[in-house]
Length: 258
Image (cartoon, rainbow, N blue to C red; front, side, top):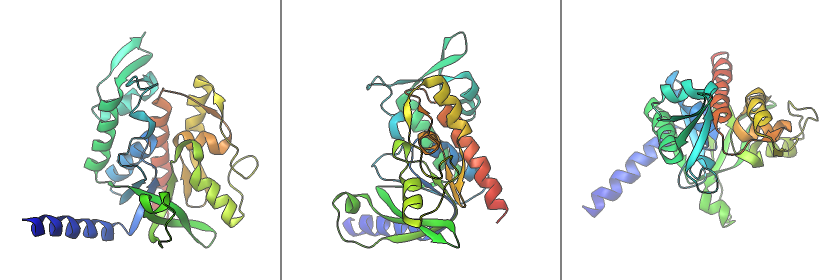
């Protein structure tokens, strides 16, 4: 039985990895915007691989605010929760709703994978594939390898589109601009950096700043505001969900044109 268990895991995982060495959409970061983007892209029939460096995808959505595991969603994003069968309760005049963060995060993961997206946890993205002045894929390694700074060469994932969803750090955007000495689709041409918290403005601009910031590279969620220099928003997640849906729509258009 021990041999059967090991063979079963190794055989199926290797096949899963091989099947995702070339995809339509590669998503870096499994926060709420990345998960929502993965859901809509996979639902549209695209091959989607999401890479999350932590053991569990979900980003900051798991912990709520200061480990109070409830979060707020505004009315504008409720249609996404309804589509994904996420439970919620009205809070203020039907303009805001409260969700259990564990239930909501689990639901996003389930929706994305059920739609056909593949999630690779414990993966770090250490670089992008750069061809013909365009982001054409990801350079990936095991997260523990990166954490321990071991000298182990990576593998490559080729993709028609890449989504930067790494949150506050804007890691992929920073890397692309720095290593390739290129200008991004921002006022300065570089990562502008995130401003301090302002929930109302932050929620609006999270969606506005979801866009293609360099050929082949899109940005969503908190990274969208970090790249374009807008505000953080705190434990309210409607903008994140709407950003993920918008990112998927933009990426679908790009994929279909390639």
